[in-house]
Figure (cartoon, helix red, strand yellow):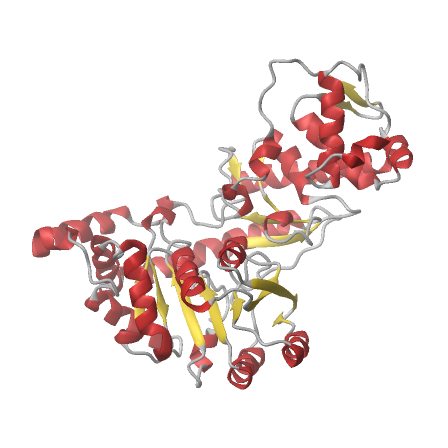
Length: 465
């Protein structure tokens, strides 16, 4: 078996998986696999690497595990589905892998049935009656003026003072990130991110030839002391940060750190790209964005409505520093001309008629109850570690004994439960998972967490074999 390490590509456990898979398909391995410890010792690799490879073989129906006995070969040539192929695709990498599981702990967007659909219907009818075909034409590339004015008033409630000329409507946060990457980043520019973070942003920076460096998180947000040390020896173009109920950790940046970041941005002349998708989902005290402290006009504030409304609606906005506003408007126009005028008018209607704020109040009440419920259920799994965030829709869970999030993912996938493994957010967080209650009923939480408990217990047993 030792020559499997010379196989090109893939990570070590996938090399072992592919090596064993080929041996099984060729009929060179029959009956059962060697014991986990035997394989690990023979190849001088970790037990966890062998466990991951064996688990993947089981998931793909090459082998079957029997408690206390080992892994028995069950391969038949008609088998064609390999979940690891999906692990490499864009959807999974960015955390949106649609596996059609009965219980969805992977999605961090609320179910659409929580929104009062009758209000949405009334909004559309009212808009079409009053504006007719005008509502369906191309909108101003910067966005509908009335809608931007509503956003300006909403932003003031969070401490952000801006003008509508600095507000750009976008088709979701990812488009905003892509536009900023295109206009700001030149080859070799350094971008700093949190660790872990949203992969879609990291990919966008790299696609525009940026060099991405990460700084770890403390309990009160980004480790600014480490950032400051980095800045002493490096000039950066951009800091990308999710400061409120961070994805995936749920951590929020403290006010003290927010103010320190503003000062550092001014001293070292870089922009802060603030990604806000969840600040409305606070369960105790509302946290103000970094932009509210931005006395030097260094913060690019992106807010998406998709996370807490309907993902397919694709609507958000940016509040921009004066110096880049014109460039952003031009880049937006070249990207898709403008965001749906009808969608903008709908949201303007919802905000002005207080439907949006009422919806958010109901959403916070509902998800505070679900968070509390899932928290109590998770406490029944003594081998995992996690904290209760002050808002948001997820728990970030540390797994025991070098068990990987991918191993848990594949085990639960077979049971009809989906979670997001830590590798989706960072290659350095393989022993973590993100579990969300956004799409779940209380019964789903009951059943799903029980299956998680069993999966973790079985993986611990496998580690000891």
